[in-house]
Amino acid sequence: MIKHNYPGKFIVIEGLDGSGKSAQVDLLADFLTQKGKEAILKNEPTTESEAGVKIRKILKGEIKAEPMERQKLFVQDRTEHLENKIIPALKEGKFVVCSRYAFSTIAYGYSDGLDENLLIEMNKDFLLPDATIVIDVSPAECIKRIEKRGQAKELFEKEKKLIKVNEIYKKLPEIFENIFIIDGEKPIEEVSEQIRNVVSKFL
Image 1: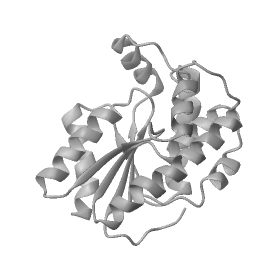
Image 2: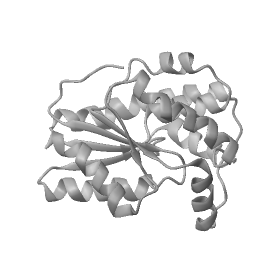
Image 3: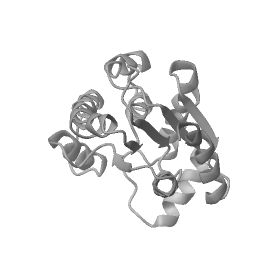
């Protein structure tokens, strides 16, 4: 991945489905705002590109696609996301906080049986985040949380899948720079504090 020299900071929050990413993204945005920083919140897959919309339909089981076709759609969506949203915001000196990024693609693609080195290669020309924070929650606990929501499980929200995904998340610090794994099974405020400690060095 490519390091950037833009004045803004690119922060990614990663984790299994059910790990609490959404709540932590919002808490981090509030923290940055309190510190006088402008924070832009983004998600992948996006809802702003044709590829992103298609991915979301696939994940909900509305349409089918082979694993490699999904990966190509993720790459297409991410390319547009960086060009149209993330890089312009970084150029303006803003903090971009993104829920999921290339690391999800690699981990979930691996859970589909694709080669991890091929997946890394497919994402090598994208920006390297200044910090990628992986919220570490066990697959069993994630499944419990998903079931408590009472929502239909999406394609990847199954324990065997999550175990495979977790294998790659645990390996990320060996593969990429700027990866921070934090304990996501603590109370929400303690998890938020761990994230603030990582991000504070950029303030």
